Image (tube, rainbow over all chains, first blue to last red; front, top):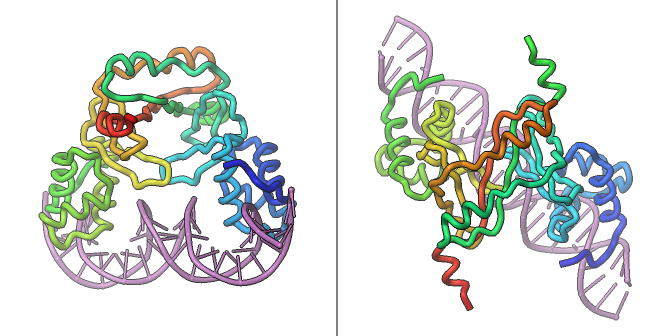
Length: 131
Length: 131
DNA sequence: ATACGTGCAAAGTGTTTGCTTATCT
DNA sequence: AGATAAGCAAACACTTTGCACGTAT
């Protein structure tokens, strides 16, 4: 399901997420997109984000109980979530091979992919917690 | 924050999750616990599950958009989610070391832990999809 | 006795959806 | 022209919370 029509709204949503450096959620995108398309609706933002995810332009990041956030960097990389400030930090590194061992160990399952993320403190919060 | 009082409700909730073999969510626990404590409220189930998680008796499993499910098996193990039927399969295996490499690569971050889960097809669904 | 827990219902949050109107191609 | 998208508001699913009453210790 590709984007069939490149409307003002869709251009704006994609633009906003691409420019963003904070892995924004739908509410943040909505707020920002309204500066470009003032009467866009939140429903459209959600629908557009879904479409962009389906097409592979965005990666959705889901966190327990919190709103889904979106990453316009679709190159293979990992994330660390700062447990203090909630920021999501991109880790530009190879994704470790966590599949082959598990696959050979559980041959009756068809393991297609793995998801991996890290938790800890970002540089800023780490410094602030020093006593 | 330990359980301060061991009420009927708390006993029942813990019992139900321990007996369950399906990584149940709050609604399922609620439905089952009502067979033991018929007038327990859903709010109490949520509150009790939270408490049990805080105490380390349960591990919460969160999935994009779906209800949080709970695992009474707190030994270190991994999960695979079947993308067909949604079942969560326990993988009793060592958790691969995904920390040391990333830690040495990003020394300015304090990486405390990682979360890792697998996606694919369980034995049953795999068979059913054969053409 | 008294702090802590429960039941109930209402409120919250994030997200989806039905429907009519507008718009891209 | 005709299919697809947008706007709006209502509905949704899951979870949390305020408050008065109940109960374990």
